[in-house]
Image 1 (cartoon, rainbow, N blue to C red):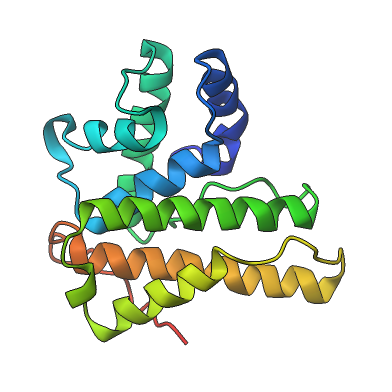
Image 2 (image 1 turned 90 degrees about the vertical axis):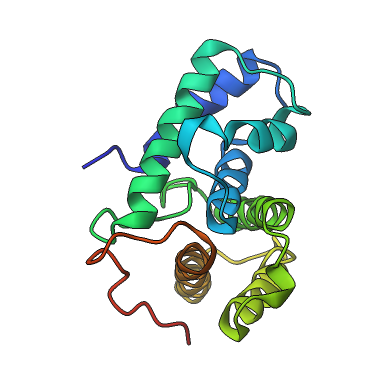
Length: 191
């Protein structure tokens, strides 16, 4: 199994800072997943140009950073297409303060929505389920950062995180490439 995405944050953050790109790794991953879930062409590096538009005003990335982003892309595609890999948004680990994780989730969702909106011209004509989750994600993107460090807040965060995870998979199933037979999500249902 590939390295869990959360273990890549520090390495990606360092590479972004060295390249003087004012994006956080969660924003890069959110935009990347948004592009993928919006149906960006995955072959021949076609996904790179729209991602560069979002994260670096269309400017090229240093080779080391581009390599990290490509690895993140490959890992994300594997996780979205194979439920056994378990797609999850790239977020700080559970040991980080909850307020930081909530802020990171909000940034991830904002970037996801931007990515999917620029690549999917028929978003308004999506299925009712996808339009509903997009509306719900827009609300999550506006979540307040003043949260308590208690079990109730932690549980609420985990519910939001699971919703975001399943919403991304639902969008990928609708707009992404047709999955080979036998790799469909095993009944991910939104409630």
